[in-house]
Structures are given as structure tokens and as C-alpha cells.
Length: 440
Ligand SMILES: Nc1nc2c(ncn2[C@@H]2O[C@H](COP(=O)(O)OP(=O)(O)OP(=O)(O)O)[C@@H](O)[C@H]2O)c(=O)[nH]1
Ligand SMILES: [Mg+2]
Image (cartoon, rainbow, N blue to C red; front, side, top):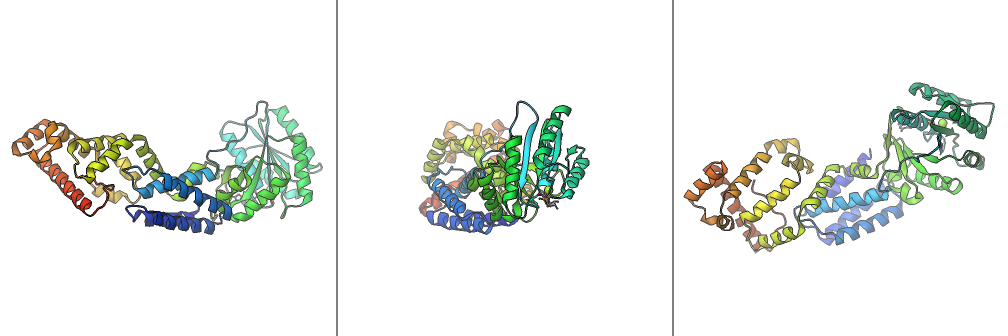
């Protein structure tokens, strides 16, 4: 889904990650790239512009969490803003106290209304509901037959009457549902190539007389801004309650999904992802944003870090690093914070770019962490503050106390001193110490 847009975002963020520190100039460049990617995905011009303003404002005001690179922080902001743009949270169907719930399905010809009616019926059936399909598209005799076939496929009854009129068919469907105990009525209405008065009058009449609880506007997701414009024109005549975007399995570029809520004020409730009747998903803005960015996991990672990283401690650590006063005590603190985020293998797996091969070759595992922690715990307070005093006999004592070997103590001390040296070098060059590497 939205492969092109996803690829572009990946490229943009890759570029951003290349800079250790993100300056306003980098941010400007990034935002220009993001804007271009959105416009090329056929996102509404005004929507894209506003989105860029919000992302930039938030990025400038953001506190960059110490242990996470600024680029990842920006990805999180873009993700949040895309989520918000698409409505924030999932918009479910209305619940009704007295069944049947009436769901009216409207949209242009070929948008995928009839298919969606079948998909929705199947979706509801799986949830233990008993839907009844009503064929209110009497324009083409084949339409009623199509709905009947769809219903048969999923073992859901469909009702229509070619001798009657759409309003009467809906009313009869309602009566039938009451009599036979169906709890949801799905009304499949007629489409037109273009919006015309005759169609709108027919739909408004059904709405007025049958009073549906939900009116879902079905739009072909592949048509981008056309879908958004059509939705708006429909909305002028008939106040629908939600949107269904179909054909999202095709080469839909993302423009409709990203702009339709913002332009119409109506939420996307479902997306169609194929011709088969099971190809329906409830729409979740957050998951969609993550999918577009191809970064579901990094978002969870930053959230985890925000949950556990003590900002005050991070600040004081940064100061110490800059003055190269970093001790084993600080190191121990950092280990605790990392451990709070979950198993190392999971954390590393969330970092984009670290594929499974890199993981396999890396010595990072929870066992190594436990060993390092045991070693630090076996040091005296003075040793933690001034590791340079740890001589041969102290090393032996620490090894015994921690259940490790002198070789392991040697390795850890060597890594620690290397890191201290590196910090000093960095500080001489005037670099900030916010890209700290752990010595394992
Ligand atoms: N790939 C794909 N095709 C879909 C999807 N939804 C519908 N279609 C196809 O789109 C075509 C039109 O679907 P219909 O459900 O007949 O559309 P409609 O809105 O009822 O059309 P009218 O009744 O003529 O107004 C059919 O060939 C469907 O198989 C989808 O999510 N993905
Ligand atoms: Mg149809």
C-alpha cells in the first residue's frame, strides 16, 4: 500500500539520519522533501502545506530525548501528524439501542459500493451479527442480481423488488429485518457516472424516509483528489457519516487517504484492499501512518524511550560526558534505563537498518548486559568513580565477586577507557556528546 510514498519517506529519513545533529537548515530541507512527496502522492495542496507548518513547529519546539537521535524524533512527529491528519483514532460504526442498525452505502458508479456491502456484511457476520443486504439500486436489473450473488457467497440473505422503487424497497427491507430478527440492514444504492440531481434526490429521499444510522460514502481510493472532490460534492447534498476508501490494494498513491478527512471533516471508517469479500479493514489512522512511513516499530521504540528515559538524568549525563567525567556509576544508570525498555534483542530489532544479519553478528545480548551489571555491582564506590585504580588484585576480586573472569573485567575496562578517550577527543573538537556509544 502506498509503496511509492513509503519509499520516498524512507529516502528522506535516511538522508536526515546521515546528519548526527539536525539543524534548522536540515529541517527545512527535510520539510521541502516531505512536501514534495505528499504532493506527488496527490495529497491536497492546502492539506500538505498546513501539515508541513505543524510538523516544523513541533520539531523546532521538541525536546530531543538524549538516547535517541534527532532524526528519529522527527519521524515520530511526522508519524503523529499524519495520524492526526487522518482523524487520530478509529471511527467505528454507530451502535444502536433498538435494532436493526441501518447502514446506507452511497457513491459514484463503479466505486465499489456493492462489493463493500458484501464485505461489510461478511465483516459483521464474523462479529456475530446478522446482517440483511437490501438492493436499492434499481437502475440496472443486474445490480440486484450482483448483490444477490455476493450475499450467497457469504451466506447472507439479500432482499429487493425490481417492481418497486428504492425508498419502498428500503422500507420493506426494514420491515423484513424486524420480522425476521436481522440486526443490521445494509442498503446498496445506485451510482452514476457523475453526480446528477436525479440520483441525489433519490438518495436524499431514502435518507429522509428510512433514517439510516450511518451513511457511508464509498470512494475509489485510486482516484486521489477526484475522490476528495466528489466526497465534498456529495456532502453538499447529503450529510454522510463516514467514508470507505476502496481499491487500496492497487496503485493508490495515498492522496485520498491523507486528505479526505481534513477536507470533508468525515472520518474514513473502512478501507477495501482487494476484490475478495474478506478484503476489508477497519481504518486505524495510527497504523496507516506507520505503514506509510514503513516505521511502525521505531515509533514504539521512541515511545518506550520517552516512557523510561529520565530527562534530568540524561541532561546531567550529557554534561559529564562533555567534561569526560563519565563513571561506571553513570554507566550503570544507563544500563538500567536500557533494561527498562525491554529485551535487548527486541530493542535492537526495532531500530531500522539493523537487519537480522547485523543482529546475529553483534555481541549484544541480555546475557552480556547481566554480566556487565554484575561486574559494576562488584566494584567499590571508589572504583566506580575512579576506574583507573582497578589494578590486578582488584580485578581478581571483582571477577570472583561477579562470577566472571579477569579477562572479562579487562575487556570491559578497556572498552570503558577507550570510550573516555573518545569523549575527550570529541570534546576537544567541540562536538556535543549526544551520540554516545555503549562499549559493548
Ligand atoms: N482491487 C479492488 N477492486 C475492488 C475493490 N472494491 C471493489 N472492487 C472492484 O471494483 C469494481 C466495481 O465494484 P462494484 O462493487 O460493482 O461498484 P459499485 O459502486 O457497486 O458500482 P455501481 O453499482 O455500478 O455503481 C468491481 O470490479 C469490483 O471487483 C477493492 O477494494 N479492490
Ligand atoms: Mg453496485
